[in-house]
Length: 291
Image (tube, rainbow, N blue to C red; front, side, top):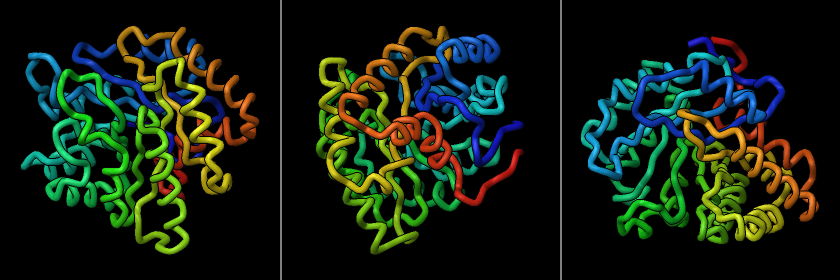
């Protein structure tokens, strides 16, 4: 895969896009993505634990399809959706890294994020320099899963050196808890430095429109130092590669930008969510090359 690594071209990026089973049509997807106003983004492979009666996708096939979906642009980055408590999870990390996946997606709908079986898998991801995007917040899954998906459960990751992880959806409806954890880990860097993880917050809805202002208010006006928060808040849409919506991203961005203006959030903080946070989440700071 020919991908830009490190400093990304100017533009906005969608950091949360889902892949569903089906034949990839990367050219059509990229055309719709551009119409929606984006230069690139993160593509999340198929769910390894489907919510319906569909069979689980073959891991290698899911990786290959994600790579094919991302093939039409040097600024589309495939992530492998992994269950880290499977017995073969470590082997799947190796396969994903070897194939060139840029990160991992984890949805802890049936296990705690800090499950003892999962922690060594996250450590392997961190050593490989691969970030992890976690679902956090209530899950529309028809299952009793909320005890697993609360953001406070991610405290267990604090001692994994070099792990870059993101809590998606501002953990709605537990936004206060998410932002409290964010502040705790920002402060802990002063003491622990590189001996701990780095947390990002993904603002992908999640949040119903009627609660969007409250969620962004909690995030941006909590009072944590702006210089620490900047480049740690990422934007995403939760759209699908198949028939990628053009209208939905514009609706979300227009609403978010208007709310941030009302909250007097600095323009540089707002724009960092669309590109530089995405860049820092994806790459080690020293990576500056094209592969």
